[in-house]
Amino acid sequence: MSDKEFKICPCCGFKWNTREEFIEDKNISIVGYQVSFKLLGEGAFLFNHSCKGTMALKVRTFADLYKGSIYKKRATGTDECPGYCLYQEILDSCQAECECAYVREILKLFKKK
Image 1 (cartoon, rainbow, N blue to C red):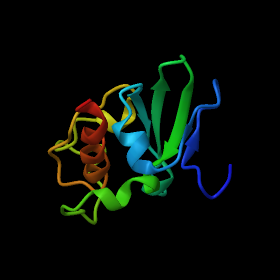
Image 2 (image 1 turned 90 degrees about the vertical axis):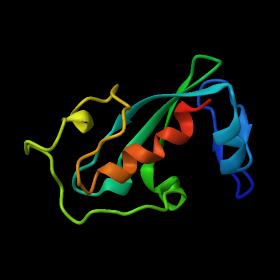
Image 3 (image 1 turned 180 degrees about the horizontal axis):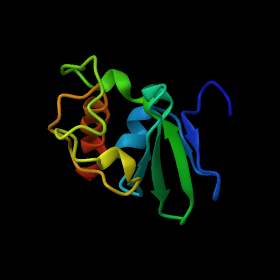
Image 4 (image 1 turned 120 degrees about the vertical axis):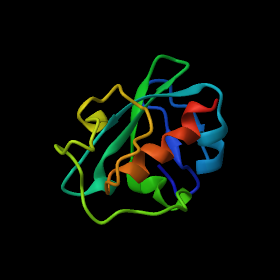
């Protein structure tokens, strides 16, 4: 991949030149999120392309798009936590005051398509 390409579909070779093109593409759908509790930015958003290809992009690729509060502590395993991060296919927002909550807000960018 050259410096001019943001992402290339591993299945069909379609190229998105910018992150904005990728986000706005109606042929992309968010299908999952794989958490990395050790390093949240290393977690992955999973996308399907209209060609039936699936690709992963690191959370850190989109982290700067979130402008809200980021909590310092993780709530995973507490009564406050609904456990969404434990299930790749659950893409709902999380209301817990948890360091992982901001990632779930980024997911909203892709669910609006």
